[in-house]
Each structure stands twice: as C-alpha cells, then as structure tokens.
Image (cartoon, rainbow, N blue to C red; front, top):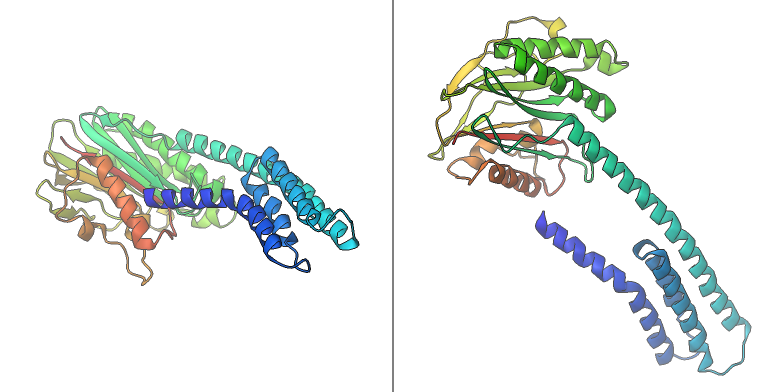
Length: 361
C-alpha cells in the first residue's frame, strides 16, 4: 500500500509540471519549425491539463501564459496580424476561459466528494467504533478493508465487549450492500452490546441477535425482507481461564495462532444456519470450547479474506499462509494480512474484509 501511495505521488507530481512542459514545448516547436507549422495545440492543451490539477488561480495563470506564448510566437514574424494568427490567439483565449470554468466544476465536485467521505467516515466510526487496544487483559486489534477504494462502510461488522462473563467478540457479514446492510450492521452490533452485558451464556447472546434481526426484517422491503441473513461468529474469553468458547452461525471458522507457529482452525462440530434464517429450521445453539494458551492469538475474519482470489482464481488460504510465522502483536498480524490479500488479488478485491485479532499475553 505504501509503494502504491508513493507511485501515486510521483505520478501526481509529473502531471502538475505537464502544463509548463506543454507551453515550453510549444515555444521550442514553433522556433524550430517553419512558419507554416503551428504550436497552438500545445498552448490550448496546457490550460485544459491544468484545470483539474491546479487551483483556480493556477489555471488562470496557465491560460494567461499560454495566451502570451501564442501571441509571442507570432511576433517573431513581425507585427502584422493575419486571419490565421488572430484565429489561433482567439482559440487559446477561448480554451483558457473554458479551462477556468472547468476548474470550478471539478473543484465543486471534489468538495462534495470530500464531504461525502467525511460523512462516511463519521458513519463508520459511529457504527463500527474501534475498540481499545487492551480489553479485559487481552490485546485487541481490528481492521476493515473495503473492496471499493475510498469506500468506508459496508456489510461486514465487528465488536468487542467486556462483560461480567468475560470478553465477548462478534465478527459478521450481512448479506447485501448499501444502506440496508449498514442498518442491519447497526442492529446486530447494538443487540450484541446489550446482550453481551446481560446474558449469562454465549448461546443466549446468539438468541438475542436472532430476535433483533427478525424484528429488523419486518421493516425491510423487497428481496432483503425475504432473503436477508447475517453470518456471525461469537467468541467468549472468560476471565482467568485459558479457553475460548465459540458459537458459529454459518461463518468462516476462527483461527488459533499458537506461540510455536502452528495454526488451528476452530470449525463448528455441527453446522448452523446464519442469523435471520430461523424460519428454515430451529436448532439450539451450542458453544464449543477450545484451549487458548498464553501467547496465542485468535483471529476472526469475514469471507473477504478466505475468498479473495488471484488472477488464476486461487483462493487466499489464511491458515496455510500464517503457519510457521510469528507476529509482534495483533495489529502487526492484521496489517500483514491486509497487505498480502491486496497483493494476492492484485489490488482487485471483490468483497469487504473485516478482521479481529485477540492475543492472550
């Protein structure tokens, strides 16, 4: 990501000097060629290139310099004004005015886009606030990678809540996109935070989420009202016990990264339907327990990680890629994963990716 940002800055710097190069190139071209050849295309291109790159003052100055250059190249042939010379100078002047107008349109669009980004970032912080780095004695890190560049919000979710029963976690993926998915994310996280504090068991927390989504479904319209569902994995880290309890509702299984470099997948012994599909079957949730020793890291993720494909259609396999490796902290693990997935897909991710890592010190 840093390399791409550096390349972007270099390209931007080259583009910003392009108007100057065009004007200088036009003057050189006119000096080195006979009178029948014209450098006007260079002078008209300069303000048009400057319009989206420079502020208004820079665009106006570029247009004025281009106009002065167009007039100056004719002076070397004398002060006589013929139809061709007048036409060429008027052409540059017209394009310079149009470039200034274009600059204002582009700047207004940039301002609206920047405003939308600020709103999107604020919405994401409200719906998906980042947890503290340390909760209940555990080191915590989260990361949200949007498939679409400059998009900040989608249907993936995560939350961490300390409770009298231990630190409780949720990572999930709402079917669909857009504001409907965002609304479902808000419902799941709100219900989770309340249930995590009040319910004595992880199974009861899952039941609360199921009921909350059922209520939300009655307010939806269209296909989401019938087909809407959410996959989630819930985890509970009891205080003082070296175990983790997991309830999985149709979600990719968590990974346990052990201190010796081995990676264990923690799949559910019995498959369960995602939240929101209770009408198709009703099976009681059963939390499954696994060891969580000191120095180990628990990784919860959405399918944007495990279903990321390269150009040959090969999936990214986090268990295989992480085996035998050690990471300084949960944040370093998530940064490495995000960078590797971007490289694996060539920067062309097709689905959002939410990551949550917890380490027992």
